[in-house]
Length: 341
Image (cartoon, rainbow, N blue to C red):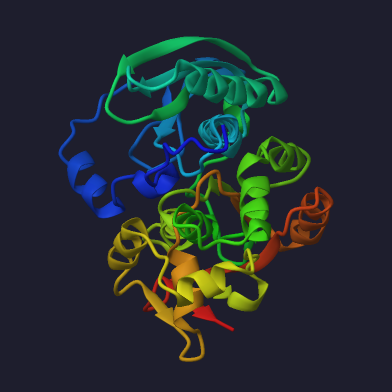
């Protein structure tokens, strides 16, 4: 399998830009149903539909082309990424369905490895892989449609942050830069190991911590990068201050950004945030790129009351991945986000 070359660049770098999606969704007529608790109005991670006073379903799906050559690991990453939206809503994964696009001319053993990797992560999540749908395509794409459940009184929205909240990021940034460098053979083995470990780690574990604490808002950081996902959390009501020195990063991503192993998706994120972000003059280009870098199976971004921040951070840090208390939510300022040292 080591000689298989089916990775042309994928993961969450393959997503459409946030600006394009905004224009499209703004023209879609909204359905009206009082039991649809969360739809696409809030740019949230998944849909939540209430069945009873204490039971709601969480629906989400995600799929993309490979960002890594190993088919089994690609399947693990795609599944971890797709299921993340359920945990970002405060829910639990129940079932998943495969979404497969695969060339008929390619070895089906590769597809088998991809699905085996996905199934391994679904099982780790406590869910069941229950079927799926496949089509013949010119390129490989894989992901999951995921069904979860949540108590509708305990949903974690992405847009309920409050001034004074502490911002916690549960995984390091830089996976987009590392995988882009890796695709052309420029990433070190150590950097790839760090990126794969981060991308294959389920957000289930961090989400489990949240069930025992007061959390105001939660989202997962994926293709729109940290700053766009943070802007969705802030909405039009609040601003935030980020301390770069506290943002967890895969260290090698700095050198890959310096060597311009950057993605079109990252530049779309930068353009989308033009006029909304103020960078301290001491923040280098490389750090800016990392903050715009599209993440695949990225961590959770949490808005936590100040009194809860230290215990939440300590529990998440105990899992062993780099994480950090990266900033605070503030009252509305001229710029939505200020990035300082």
